[in-house]
Image (spheres, rainbow, N blue to C red):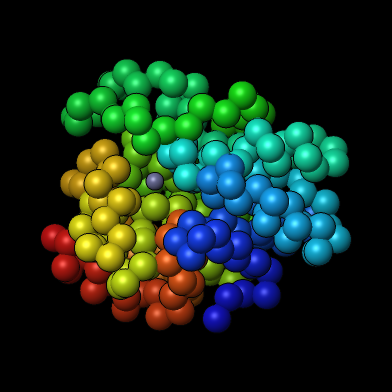
Length: 226
Ligand SMILES: [Zn+2]
């Protein structure tokens, strides 16, 4: 079901990160926890294509935990890219920003790699073939990505697909952690509606299998969560 450009890496059955093939090499979307680094590196080496970029959907530990190991281990210096708002959280600044109505996020969920971002992105920016969609809610600066070549939605934790497709903040007992670590369910629901409008072809989320019937499953997830 995955597009041929997408290589999912699944760690301990529940943690996903993805390699996206571009003309100049690979973009790694999220890193998985640090314990997944050997598998991520082995997958990159097996593809025999250089890693050019690490693109982070958000700064939770299970998405950025491998960054330092990977940045040291790969040849060259891959770009490290994260949303502008999320960069503060990656740096350990949990202060509430203008316009945010929720209390500050819970510091315990966030990772703090030594490796610093080299580029900050905003809604509508493009990184290779991936268009950035601001999807705050799970975290204040969470971003999702759409591969403009084939409509694959790399949703980070805006959507989880373990057990069933669920919008961030909607508790699924089989995998309750994304909901438990969600900053604002209300904001997350607005972001999920935005993702529905994108009419993605498939959903590649941070936790769970790639889902092919993206529009229908996202619509059902939204109606359950509302
Ligand atoms: Zn998360």
